Length: 295
View 1 (cartoon, rainbow, N blue to C red):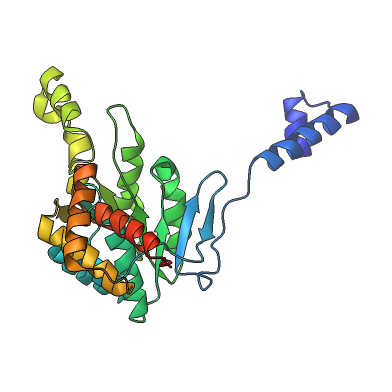
View 2 (cartoon, rainbow, N blue to C red; view 1 turned 180 degrees about the vertical axis):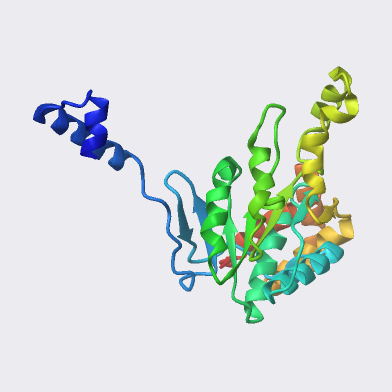
């Protein structure tokens, strides 16, 4: 430290200069947080990644519903459950992109499947990563690489705008770069967009590019790097009513079938859509009116 200071100050620093440099160095060290260390993963099955400063925060109670209550998405449920089971058992598995209609249970499915697999006795961990923290994901991967546990990285509502460069950071998880993606990490992401960016932006770049095929290839091909594409589509009226009835049965809420049907249809008409989210919102209102506490 002293030799470096001497070089900076021309080789002949006095004590005053050395004292000033020492104070500056100490201040810089205080400003730069120490690198994150892996927590005790036995504390929780779920964590949230926080960047700046880097840290994995345990989640005491995950906000999720039972897997059996997610109706109308059987194929996606079975495919993702099988993929998660084989990953938790120590075998190879694919990254998964859950895309499609709003409110149809994409994020709920990820959390429910994690809960189901943990309930089967697998010590699987889930780590939620916010889209705005994607630039720090390389540091997270290095933190998890040396751990003995297996991790599902979960990025909810993932999408990118025209000038958004965060998608480049995501490639560290999907491709892994020269070091490769840690074998104990898999990524599950949800998005309303199949290609993770608005269709009009894709068309605009194609129309204004010298080579239309290459103009959007880098961004559009990002979704191709997910081994599983699971599509979610709007539910029909029978599925919507079945979802509500399933919630009523699970929480012991009794209501006449004709009344339930009339109220539920009126509720979805005021929302202008049918989905699992709308079904849950109606049921929440119904449970409140019946004096039932949802836990």
